[in-house]
Image (cartoon, rainbow, N blue to C red):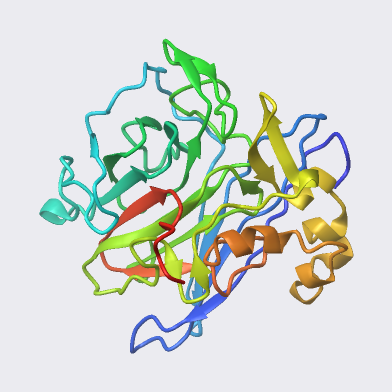
Length: 344
């Protein structure tokens, strides 16, 4: 990446899996990329992710998010009319949501519940998508609390948590994940931020979703399915574990550390911090066969993969990072680590 300019890298990535009896193999592709700030700062504007799905029958769907902002008035932190907030008690059983039930009257609306299992307040954010607008794009989530929102079908967006925020009349600043100083986001947040990327009913009655740390991480995060009308079984445990491991804190090397107030508040990607074609998987390293963190000068992708084995750690990290849910599905997005009492 050239210094002083944003470089967007949009690469289709593939993850194979059985979807239904009629389609034995489907390749799911997400485009995520790294970014390098255009100043000497530690954070920059994140780019949109697109989700594509293609099967052996050459069926393809592409749903790309737009940079176009949703016109809305910034407001003081408050629960929106389509969201309910309550205390979090168990990772397996979040509090009953108050919004319209998912799939009500054939609407295929989805419920997404955010749970805060950290010791700090999180200001949840959503990237606006004019084609499937949400009632709000910012929510306050104190420690031990949860908030549930109702989303439209075909929602294609990303959610993330902001930290170290101060807002007055809807305007302020966050140490990480900032949305241009607004409580109600009108664009993409600054990096690094751990992302929950979703594309509901994208193709053949399937949702695609993932956790991405391609640009870095500011909070631990994992996603669970809480309801699937198609009977999809959740591959992540209620406390954030997969066979490869559980959700742990990122052990960030100094070279990638993002600091505020003298302490580390996030860990940025090697592409964004150091640049270069190899770390950013571009130029001669753009082919999938050449984009291999094991051949980097330092395998910084492993820093993120060790913390969250189910998450994207670099742009082509598809095989263990793309998840699918069939039918009308509801989700729980948890900010937090696997309890230390869990045996892994």
